[in-house]
Image 1 (cartoon, rainbow, N blue to C red):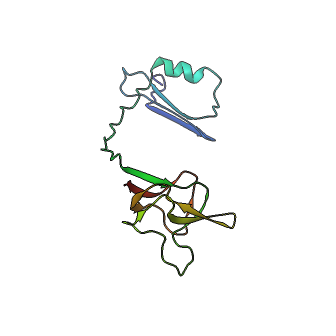
Image 2: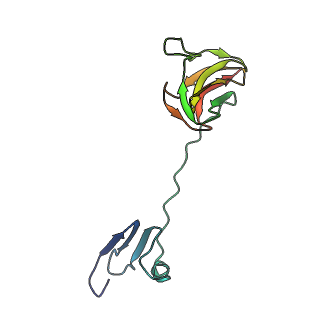
Image 3: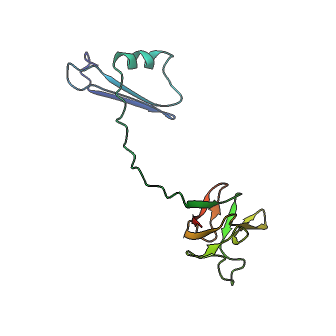
Length: 149
């Protein structure tokens, strides 16, 4: 790079990206490689990186949140479509602020044309409904934020 008076070199091919930057004349080149497939022979990138290691990014400080030990979630036991009501013209099983018991039905999840009634499985108050009616849900996805009673 010094002989050619290059300050920066970048190449990108099929999921692989290589970028070499040089700061001032006294700085060594910095190598940044991303991707999985490398068009370069084994050892070439390692040798370049060993010449001048790339500094790792500073760790991001995570905000500490006070966790309320009484807050929990009712999670989806399966993949499917979430419904808040037993039928389109019916009222919702629960609303925010509803008090539920372990056997209380809180929603329906349709999986492979079968309507599965989901129970709260705990005594709690519904704090927040986390999924919109008619949306797809994944196994283990939180459906309701609740406060245990």
